[in-house]
Image (tube, rainbow, N blue to C red; front, top):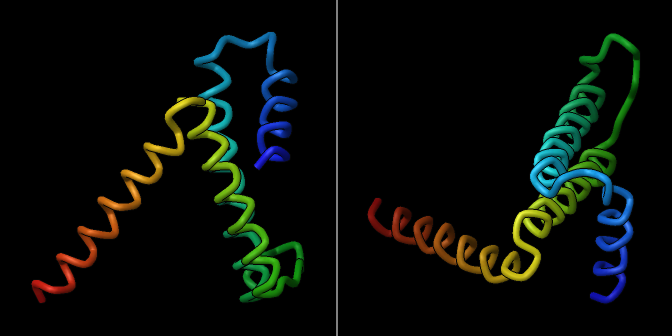
Length: 105
């Protein structure tokens, strides 16, 4: 966990000249960028790119993890002290809702 905090501190220091709201928006944008890389890899896997890039499921997974990391960092940018609790609460609510929906069918 200490490595993650250090990485966040380094990222935060790199953007120290920017207002907090801009840093938050840029990190949310990074999530979209990473998700775009997932789609590019998926298109490459299915031979749908015009540039001839060939990809594997392993590369798709790698880019998915990059997206998750970017999303977690974005949550931390938005609320450094409450991001974990917010994540836990949302995860619980969403998975409970999923269980309730499945049980109702």
